[in-house]
Image (cartoon, rainbow, N blue to C red):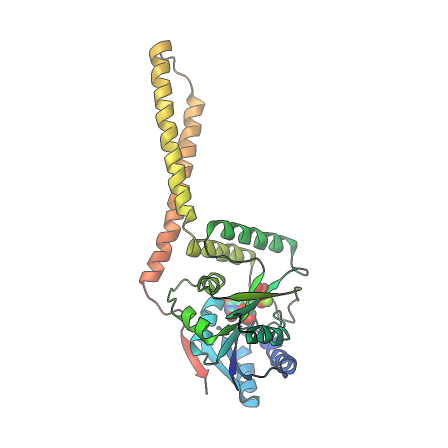
Length: 309
Ligand code: UDP
Ligand code: MG
């Protein structure tokens, strides 16, 4: 029988873990795959690790990794993918927002032999704060216009992947990991199943407003150089404009003389150009910051303890 590794990143998920494993077991019992759970404790400060240990004592197909601190979901996903040894691999949220029943359908699609990845998309966002839905949609609109890597709106990290796909993802060694992009970047034949949004079972989301904003900016910087082109473009336009203006005023002065005027225009122009320069510097700085982090080659995560077999 082929094996399936289920990677579950967990940050303060003590309240849902037991429920999660019971539910997944129940809803995937028909699945003709030998399941292996791989829970990643991403530096939780509640009882998550204790619960993981209890679960691994109960289920002999449940293993865990525990980080030395919170490294973020991206790091947890990477650790999971690196430790996973299944013929198929899936990534699932701990809060049951990724319906385990879909695994059956995903595997059926996989069996047709047409696909290497079967993922899923939320077609509704009901139960989610309006402002958050709006920002998410805007993010997808922007990134899909700026980046060559296509990231359809509402796609989750929850997906069934073949071993080959996982191996290719692991070859992407960047430290700034934006999984949504990386998973899409490797390509392969992908099918998306659709489902309605499901609200979190228990616990609370670890994503605040500013975290989502900074996550979006990371996504854009990691997968597009369009902002840099924008800075170049603005610089070029300012340059052309200044030449035209210079010519205009030279001729004007020669013909009409030079009464001192246009002080407000001057101030506005100085502010405008100054602002554009700072803005462009900021954009460049963002990319340099990424390069800085990459060149340090720091490990993406540190494992404090684990049980992998
Ligand atoms: N998560 C994690 N590390 C973090 C934040 C979140 O491993 O720093 C996990 C979390 O436990 C959950 C998944 O990532 O399994 C998705 O997180 P959450 O439900 O908070 O995000 P949302 O569904 O609101 O996007
Ligand atoms: Mg969630």
